[in-house]
Length: 476
Image (cartoon, rainbow, N blue to C red):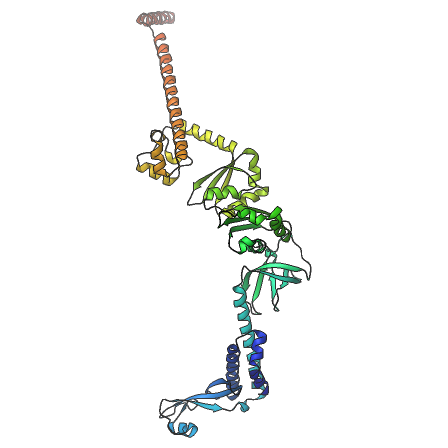
């Protein structure tokens, strides 16, 4: 058992090297000794082991219960046997610890114990590594590229830990060489039979966040806060920031003097374009900012519950707002967290004209069919007896503003639209009435000109009679 004693006496050294709590190692040793002893003795006794801190050795003992009559000698003993073992004073029900000599353990048992100890120490080490790195998910760390394995990049992140970066976490715009220094963020930690596997990333939005925290002191000290960040790695990124102090420009702080701060991050990301957006709690304002560099004319909330926005831009800004292969609007939608539908002014005019025409020609126009009036707005207007466009046209601006919680300008715009449609419908109805009256007059003239007199009818009958008589005479 010298090898076992040697391990026991060097618990402190082992715990320091492996950075493991000494008590974890002690528990591993005690469990290993018990396991090896049971295999060695096969006595069926309830064996336990205890580390003696004074002597630095492991004590092995069997626990037995004092009973009046023994039915299991491996776990029970009589009062007389107990008194002989530990001295006078034993009573029925006592639990006694009977020492067992460690010297009786053979070489194989000792080796088994040593292997179990090392196994448990490795398990404890793996658990410690897992707990450490799972709490560091999202953290930026430095490392160097160690090797490449089937599309995965193995990164040495120090302390003998090898992290892996799968293909999905690698930017297509980047290539690295062996031994090259690299900055990555920890994105996940997986439990594995070989130990915890630390997964790192170069594509995560957290990498963008951490880089800005390093480059911008105002973000590090909390003056400027990053509210959201999205990326299409290697191509474009958008980051939304807001300032906690009125006199600090969040966008300017991130850009830096002559763009020095953001340019440093762009170089780190191998030329990835970065749009720095000022965050707003109003989704319409935020969406207008997020579509930068395009200039937005108007943003309308289509459905608050479904989080849908309609953005109107000038004709020459539409392609810029959408971006190459829809990239700009796609990133903006992710950043804001709303669906964004982009329309040009020309498209909107055509749609409004078409909608107006449909409303003018319809027999009854329900407010629920009007774009810009949501289902909740319609329900509110219905409660106040407003269900058609004509009824809305007769309402006051103050009432509309109060009912729908609109600004005076918004209420006036809605009322003007209702009046315009109502007037157009009235005018169309009048025109149709005039056309109908004209058609009726023409039809009346045609009827009077086509009437036949009684004389004409009678004359026709006499002629028909004469022809019939002539035909009969010829037959005879």
